[in-house]
Image (cartoon, rainbow, N blue to C red; front, side, top):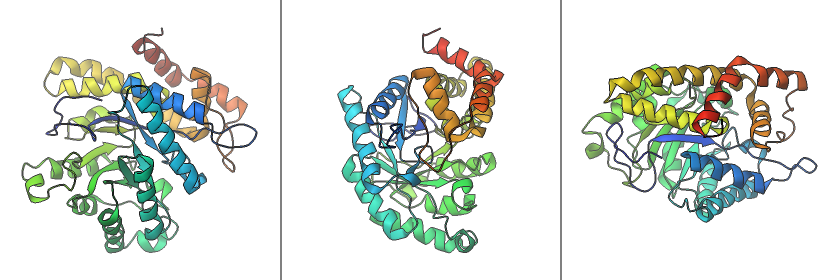
Length: 342
């Protein structure tokens, strides 16, 4: 992760601007039990490229994991990083659930398992009630953050929360909470991102709203890699992007060029070139969902496997088309160059 000042934040130990990846859950083919060796290998592979892990998120099929399994993937990720000499890499853990009570329980369990931060999605089962009730949503996140032993991210992903799409006013209000440390905007709304980033970039923000953990400021992340460069220019802090599983060196390089371009206009041309490659790859691979990402990991690195049922595997013809797609091949080629494997 970058160790330079980015958009007013001075990184120290834990929460830093940069690139994070929602790590897939890997399963054994015959039993659907967790494939721990593949998980450990993947977490370390990405961390060595400069990508920190988010465990038990949407890509990690958290909805398919029981509490014990969620805790296991956190513990194994922490152990793998520590054994690889990467003890400074933080772990974000998904702790969303259907009720406030269970969400708080998952936050406590994640902290005990070794997570540094939690990320919470609005409960979507009763979205018909909650989507039009910002007071209830604010109360949910406030109560969770009040009682969580680790700082809490807001996860705004309408596609996985029954259509709940929190607006910039509500998220900016929640940013004032001392134990809420950021937002992941998988809604893809750059205007929303701009407004929230402007709020927390104000020089008086932290004096008015100090943090419970001074190493956990409020950071604003896009949920895709396809607008990383423009988001950097409006005071955002990086991305939590599924594409970083497939092309970690590419997305980290894109982030580094985007940051460099803030002070060196000469870097902007290369940043824009790489952003175009990433945006095309992100668009095509995202349409293949979790099964497509796992197929590409299998193709590239020799592990990946299948989603847990009832999610279906990618069909063989669709898999072949995905691999052969110019957007994917363009991304694969630049990743091989940047990783030194061309």
